[in-house]
Length: 232
Image 1 (tube, rainbow, N blue to C red):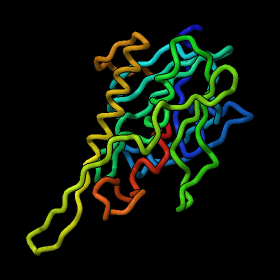
Image 2 (image 1 turned 30 degrees about the vertical axis):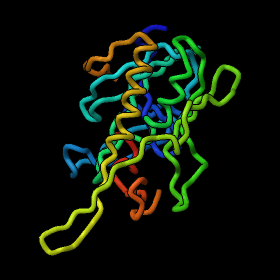
Image 3 (image 1 turned 90 degrees about the vertical axis):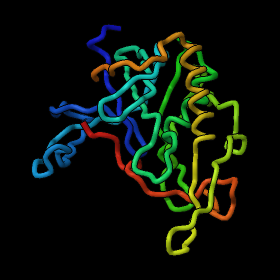
């Protein structure tokens, strides 16, 4: 597949999409949003939603100007190839955690190899008890069968917690997700090794539970990750 057929895929709630500055007709939806560098300016982009299907050709860790370290995937389709970069770490939360989309896909990648045919799409149906879509990427194999992780949520290392007291005597629980984060990052390094792609940083191509439990993470907290990814 020629490089000029490589299409950059982004994620927003419930779907993958590609973006264009021009209206390409049927299937493209107009989106207006503030310019991140000039809030007084409104930018226009056209999005087309899609699922991804093709051969898994490339898996690596890269650096992105806006998103930091990302899991970089290239999937070669019949008529067009897709570049998908998923942030490894979340932003905007008081607890530093790995990104939920990243978490959902890295376990599946452990059970795939270079050249495998996959179909990938974003969860658009299943919601948590507060009505928010779970931030999951679903991966199917060439037979349309779900590619599962080798572990369950209950088998993940638990978050650490510490009760701290401020100068006024008020107490609160501080959470530390580093044991869980390390589990996912170790798995990421293993997957990248299996695919034979570089682990070192590279420049990117263009384009719920009670606080009373010390072994469980705190309830879901709203963050910037609840918004769509960069819309351009």
